[in-house]
Amino acid sequence: MPDIGGFRLDDEQRKWVHGCLKKADIPFGERFDLDGFVSRIEGTIDQFRRAVPRRIFREEHDALREIWLLTHKTDPNPARMRRLLSRLGRRARLALDCRAEIVIPRLFPGESVKGGFLAWAKQAENAKLVTALEALSADGGEIVKGRSRGEDKRSRPRLEPRVLGFVRGSAQRQPKGGRPSEDARQQLVMFLACDWQLATGQTPAVGRSDKSGFGDLVHSVFQWLEISDDPTEAATYALRRYRDEVKQES
Image (tube, rainbow, N blue to C red; front, side, top):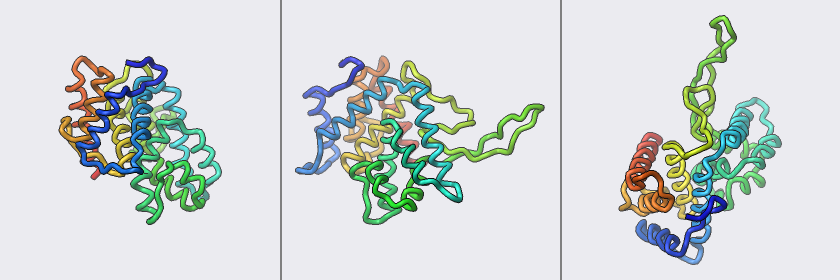
C-alpha cells in the first residue's frame, strides 16, 4: 500500500476500475475522462485514510451551516456566501458537487455543473446562487432541544440543518480523528458514489454485492485498503447501509 502521503492506483487497479465501468455498461468515448475518474477515487481514498480530524470537520461544518443560515435570512448576503465557499475543503466541495450534479439542472433547466459547483457559483447571478445554496448546503434538518439557560430552563427548540451528515445539538457524536469507524466507511462509499456519478453522469446501481459495476468498485477499494479483517464483509455491510439510505431518500 502506498504511504499516507498519497494513494495512487497501480496499472492493475486502474484496469480493474475500467472493468467495473464496463460491467455497468458505461459507454466509453473520447470525452470520457478515465484519468479524472481515477484521480477522484484516489482523492476519496486519501481522505478516508487520513480520517478527517475533528477541527477540520468543524470548520467545514461551520462554513456550510453558516451558508444555510444566510440563505434563510430575509436579506441574504451572496458576497459572504462566496467567501465561505472559497474556503471549503475537499470533503465539503465534493459533497456540493455531488448534489449539484442533480439539483442544478432541476432548479435551472439547461444549466449544469460540469466544471464543479464552485465554478458555476462564480458565474451565477446572486438570486440563483442563494436558491442553489439553500438546497445544497444541507441535507434536510432536525428539531433539536433548546440551549440550557440554567435552573432547568431551556430556550425554544430550533431547526438545525443536517450538514455533512451531522446535526448540531443532536445526540449524534461529531466525527473524530483516529482509526476510521463504520461511519467513516459509510462516508467512503458515499463519496465513491459521488465520484461515480460525477464521472459517468449516472447514479450507481444500488446493491451490496460485487456483481454490479459500482459494487465491484467498492469491494475492490475495501480490498486494496485492507479494511478490517474481512474486507468483503465490511464492503457488503457498508453497501447495504448505502442502499437503505438511498431507498429512504427516494
